[in-house]
Image 1 (cartoon, rainbow, N blue to C red):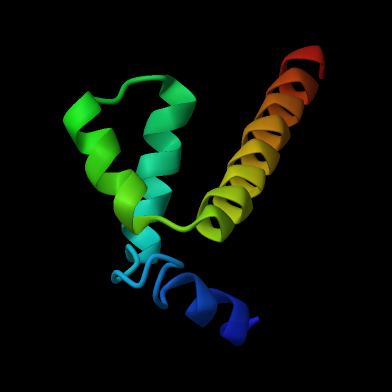
Image 2: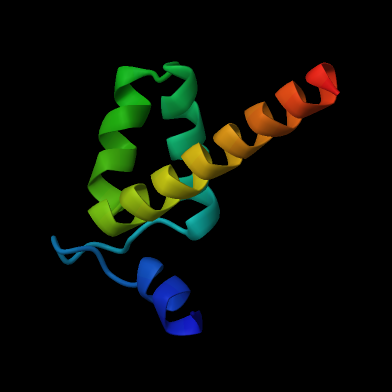
Length: 77
């Protein structure tokens, strides 16, 4: 697991330094909301690897669905 997380913070395919895990997570969360400035998107696209986006996207969806299920169970009680 550590190697996978460490691999998310290594160099991107273009040879440039890849974004930190926190920056990638923030970018994925903003994309869920659909609120991004074009200038910020271009800067992030240059530093975030596809692996970061895929893993964090699945994690975000899993958390979102889990929260919805818990909310429905709580309301339906």
